[in-house]
Amino acid sequence: MNKILILLSSLLVILVIISIIFLGSSKTPQPTTYPQPTFETSKPSPIPIKVVSVEPIEDLSKNYNPVIEIKFTFSDDIDLDNFLLEIDPNTQIRIIPDTKTHSYTISPKKFWPTGITTIVVKKGTRSLKGYVLDETFTYKINVQLPENPPPDAQL
Image (cartoon, rainbow, N blue to C red; front, side, top):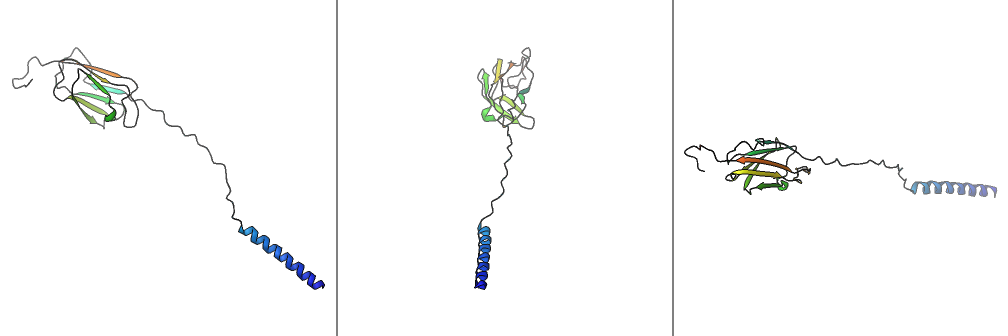
């Protein structure tokens, strides 16, 4: 009887060990979690675009031809859909971009009217990067007919 009792006790211990191994291996191991680092992401502050130069330089004492082209150079490329221009007196214009130099040549479709023409690049004009002109820029030019036009000129 002692042998049977020892055998049963051994069998019970083996069953307990097997069940512990079986139950322990059936659990899926939980991944070790570490706290995620937090990074503060800040958007770059918008850089306002500026009018860098205008050619010809504003000088109302000089008279310019009615077909003069005016070249505006900016600090960044302008989005032509958001190029806010006001021209007085109202004149139909062409805008020819030169993105290599951030320059835009403005010329009349026919002629600039004689007298003082004012071109206003309005605050809110946007660059292709979304930056904004934060100050209105005003440029004036004195347009006059030539005093001695060539004989074949069509004025």
